Length: 235
Image (tube, rainbow, N blue to C red; front, top):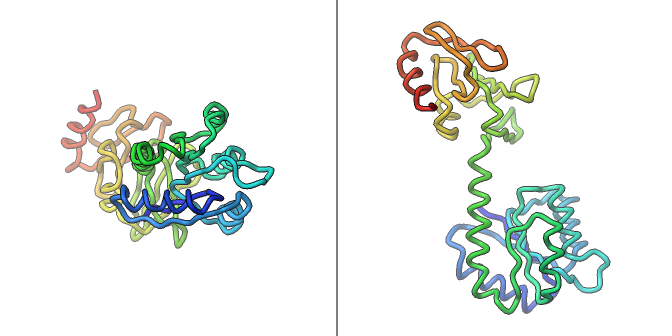
């Protein structure tokens, strides 16, 4: 379920945004409305409540911190959060580019442009989701960039996920088949207990695979022919 925040100090405008969301959102979501930057930040940062999409008014009552500076903080703490500015002051159309955001919408044109902004934000979230493998290490949720994964090894009831950047592997109880279902097609079985990222392979033969960093991964005899076909598709 998507979590959406509305940072808007005018209750009429906030309600209008909620009405537009009801009209245009085709997937489950929940909203929270914040009338001040401080209220939002207390919830977002101190209570560790993250949001997928934030509709950000720029002038929030008389606070010293406006929506742009608040968005800068969000960018730093939660870079994947999609920020959509909603303002009646067009003079902010240039300053907002000091932050990472999806759209700048004039409040007078919210009915016309909110659907486009939502579509862009949701597509960005989908693209980000597809870049990562999400799993649990013990009881803690983890994510790792798929492009960072070199190979995975299954031993008894645990799977070790070896990456380019971590010295020690991630450990999860999920089996290889379950993990491969959520990974890109470049991840393939090379052995009943191993799966490898084809883009990390330097060379291979019927007995082993050598990765670009020099690590060796065993090749299963029954997997060699299919592995060779999969590797050939990269070129």
